[in-house]
Length: 172
Ligand code: NI
Image (cartoon, rainbow, N blue to C red; front, side):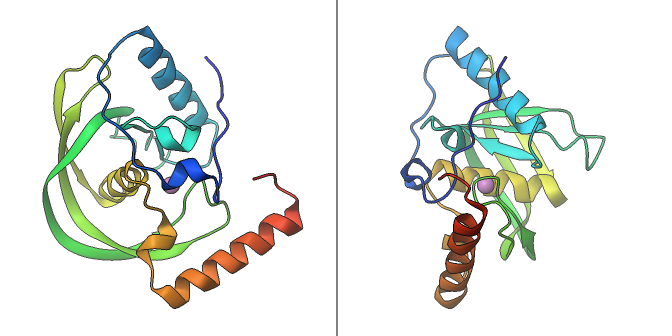
């Protein structure tokens, strides 16, 4: 297994739409294991394949540090089938370090998709898991936190983020 580089905004790969996974081969299993290891080494609860430069509809979650009842989750080709309620909360992103934005999301979400072997699964998410699922699905469609806030807020957050990148000399 290996820890992969997490792509940071404004990397172009983060703005593209990912394609469905079609082959459940050993390359995919390796990618999933590496993404899970990368996530566990990072201060996050979800990671989508485009964030490691792979434009495939695949995401992994590890909420064990927040809510122990959740196992590690792999979700492939996800499709939202039901949402309920709206809740506003602060959200961050591993691809936009230090940036926190208040985002409206559905309070509850039911998604269907495939597990790592290609078997159909359905997941009901509430609380943090619901938010994480919606955030990672956005990544599969090239949508970032910046796209979920007002224009004025977006300009403010982008400017502040790009300034902090320059100051910290973090490579983009
Ligand atoms: Ni993110």
